[in-house]
Length: 203
Ligand code: GAR
Image (cartoon, rainbow, N blue to C red):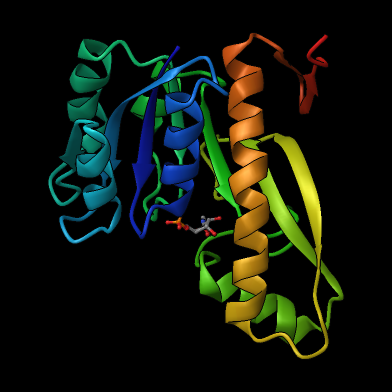
């Protein structure tokens, strides 16, 4: 299975997935990194791993249509969004039905939606007084963080947590959760029935 990872930031999830593919834990290859801006830290990670990358020019028209040629050329089977701060255009969603995944740093549907990304999420969780947050991996649809949930894991919010402390704890869960979902995908163990996603056990 060939994977393209889309990212806008530091790319620690990109690294976790690419490492798991490189060491054989996931039977798949990361064949492309798509960055939303030329300064994204993920680009140096892709370079260091010898993974081809491209920067989308989101300013002009439907960048999804332009990117489709690249995704087809690289024979991409699965798109993994990893801290990608742009909405995916309908053209891409149509071309990859149930084949675009995202990781989100809260227990969706709580603390999702437009404007809820990165540190904004953790600030909102702490301001709400919740004692539990977490990470979600879900399929991407046309909405903001509204696609079917695949897997979630809870993370405790400690009384003295600031957004950075909570973010770090959630991120380390993401680094385990996201590769495990991608592994299940690459082994053909993920099936959707309506809004319910089933993951068959490994054996
Ligand atoms: C991650 O925490 C991810 O869940 C979040 O951005 C961070 C990216 O970190 N994504 C969102 O908020 C999407 N709505 P990374 O660049 O180190 O992988």
